[in-house]
Image (tube, rainbow, N blue to C red; front, side):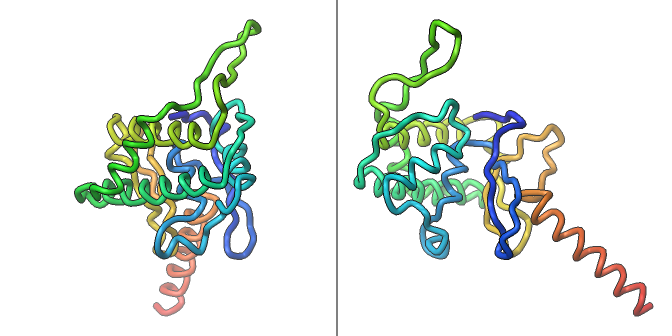
Length: 202
């Protein structure tokens, strides 16, 4: 899990405004690509190039040059949907769905992307750079998150209209919004208008 200030994704609101969202973990970044049920309308992983583009935007550094098959894209979607089930159960204090937990653990048990250091002291990836190994890397990140010190800080955005999931790695542990640029700012605007309306009514 990488909490460097340079991490995060650029997302777009319904009005097209760009904002920065850092979910705090690689596995939670995958949840921005779509999901099961009501999240399916956000689906962006339809072909190998889509999964490669997500990896390029993710906190994986350096970006691995991947060889991805159509079957591996489908498997990545399945892993993502299982992650949704497990992560949301954790945020609600509910038991993990058995099938979803099994899917995450099975993916984590497979070979992952292997990091290495070059003679120049730079990081690189070795071994087959496949979609399957990318999925295993994501699943292992989920295991680390769910069994680590920040597991109790996995949350969904406090906005009623936002379902983004993040892990609060801030020192005070009081993060409420997916992004202060987006939902946090919208909340401030609504609160200000509410106070102004109350003052006018009074």
